[in-house]
Amino acid sequence: MRTKPMNVTRRESLRLLGSGLAATSVSLPDRRHDAFPAENALDRVRLLQLLGTVPASVPPLAAERVERTDLGDVVREKVTYTVEPGERVPAFVLLPKSGPPRHPAILCHHQHGGEFEVGKDGPAGLGSDPSQHYALELARRGYVTIVFDALCFNERKDAMGKLKGADYERYEAMYRITEGKSLQGKYVWDACRALDYLETRPDVDASRLGMIGHSLGGQETLFTTAIDTRIRAAVSSCGFGSLRTLKRDRINHNYALFVPGLANNGDYGAVLAMVAPRPFFVAARSDDPIFPKDGIEETVATARRAYVAVSAADHLATFFEPGTHAFSQTMRAAAYAWFDRWLAPAE
Image (tube, rainbow, N blue to C red):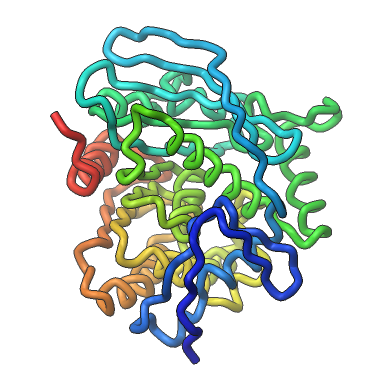
């Protein structure tokens, strides 16, 4: 049974079934695709319910620049802004030093890897793994990029100092569940606030926003792109498979990956299908021990039906190469070419 079209614009408050769920910072759809496969009836309203309540009001960003570093070919700024009342987030913004006055911009989400001390430093080029420097590399290609610390990482540790690393991550995930929320919902909310911030910058063309991430970052790219239609093109590297294959192979993951009720609402394929017809690139490795290849293929096949139904089959692409969980140079080159195709930074 198809739902009626929704005419909800960004910044309008939406209350769903008395849950207090507000979609003020989230770009909800003007309509669902009429041809969306019936067996994948997940839509943004339902996904937001599964993710849990988000703040009932959105405070001003009150952004501040606290640092500016000239790196030669690009400039790195450190900024802070408000995501929820009383909660500010640190982020790096990397800026091309040449090109037009306004650039396309890409939200770059960092990986997990148990490296709670790294966070935003990885994509910004401050981490020791060059394969994670994608925010810096994209800035050198003409994009404004932003990368923030996800909750539990780098500067966003336990404020009380009692819990470290995975213990703090578990605390944040479990207590959110008791409140009808989820850690995944928090991650998506914070990502949407980063997009809010990008929209305020005079050097950003807000009509050309993208998102990219590896591992946890690829996971967040999937969920955020499904929720927020301001993202015009996206790349997920080693970010998801299917719940069915994860359960089959007894694979544990980060807590945010397990969204309450998602298995009964279409799995990750239904989430990816919600992105259609916007361009989405799935970079993966055929021997990834935490995301079995058949699970990735299953998820993409489900989503592809939605893309085909809206005559956008070429807007969903996959790139497999041999190897285990990593974001190789070849994968990154293909990912960057995807953004060049769809967001096209001007020379």
